[in-house]
Length: 157
Image (tube, rainbow, N blue to C red; front, side, top):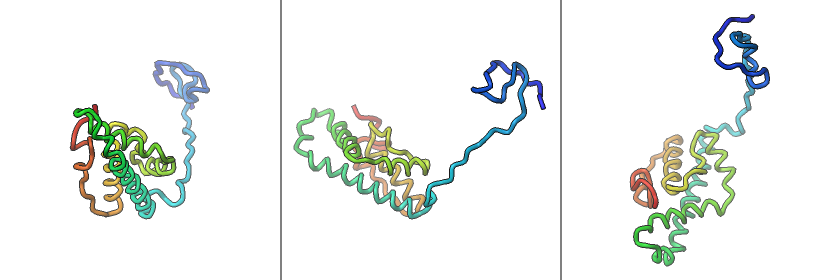
């Protein structure tokens, strides 16, 4: 059944199967591909707990890198120690393959931490906080440990 509908732009059938010609639209249900969720289901509490464990390990490695390079951090210009700390936090996850962790976080609708350059530790903390809440666990703010975060400062220079 064809119904008259104003159409501003005409597309070919390959790019838009609904538009037949200017002013006419074919009534057709769109095809939909639904993928079954990975097993176990992403909102499974045990999956969230596993992610929390992995993120705590990553966070610990970030803070350990600060300790490991403490002498080097003293050589940084006086106005850039927070940026230097953030750089160490940025490099830590890049030394490991986090694709599986990132994929699971993305499936949950969480940040996959792939764009956390300017506030790396703060982003990890925010995701940890959300996962703690999802699993019914208490979360204590840790922004005082972040060189730069949503609470401690706007950005690194």
